[in-house]
Image 1 (cartoon, rainbow, N blue to C red):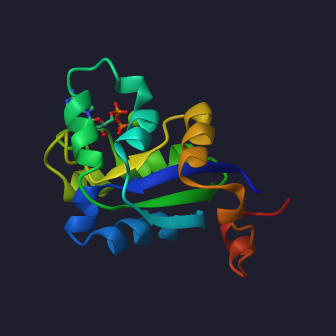
Image 2 (tube, rainbow, N blue to C red):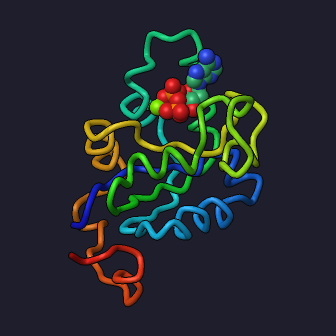
Amino acid sequence: MSGQRTLVLVKPDGVQRGLVGEVVGRLEATGLKIVGMRLVKISRELAGKHYAEHAQKPFYRGLVDFITSGPVVALCIEGPNAIQIVRKVMGPTNPVDAPPGTIRGDFAIDLGRNIIHGSANQADADREVGLFFTPADLIEYGRVTDPWIVETR
Ligand code: DAT
Ligand code: MG
């Protein structure tokens, strides 16, 4: 593995609106590497584990209803500073605050329909990747472009 691994979900709104290619394309364009990718219909049990930190929040019920409402695309994205780079490309949680050029800024207008999930920190990333992928699902591979994306010192 080179760098960090983080979990990304193209949420049900992104899938329904035909934005999977757009979102995955923007993440690929950064140079980060896709090491896992699956279409998943999230169960309420899995949603509960994924969003455990929000279990006591007033919006939790709606959040679980939404994330289980249709398929999501789960990705494991790898590279140097992958967690922070993905969060930057996503933009802030509330699309009202998300600048143009970010995924949430360009494609969303509502806090509860914000297209994409990305792990917030290393501990969340490790836990969340493990919820959606087995080790065998994650593929180690090189790209001929790798030396053009990361300087080898
Ligand atoms: P993020 O998805 O940027 O990590 P989060 O972990 O704080 O944000 O919240 C998870 C999701 O829950 C978020 O993408 C949208 C929804 N959400 C957050 N705060 C909310 C609120 N106050 N009301 C309704 N939905 C909310
Ligand atoms: Mg979060």
